[in-house]
Length: 106
Image (tube, rainbow, N blue to C red):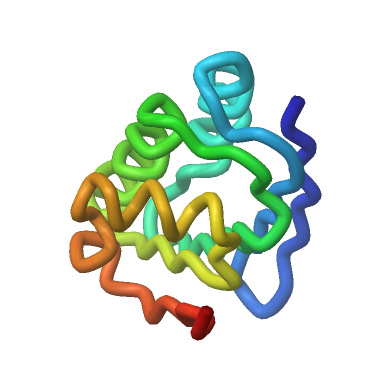
């Protein structure tokens, strides 16, 4: 289950994701996400509450980045959870998004 809190301030829309961004929640989240994508939008996603991310969830992040770029907008990912870092690293996508990742020392 994925919950999404949305806030807009100073022309920036922020999404705070909590739960699992997987194949089981991606379709519903996709509909919510696509409704938000307007030309010139800056969208920030706080991924700190994401417990699980799979390839369907990663693909949705890629779609958001592509669609916003096509609309002259911008996607910013921040506060990556360990689950998100693991998948982005495994799929070699961290550089694609271009957002700083904080990797904790073990």
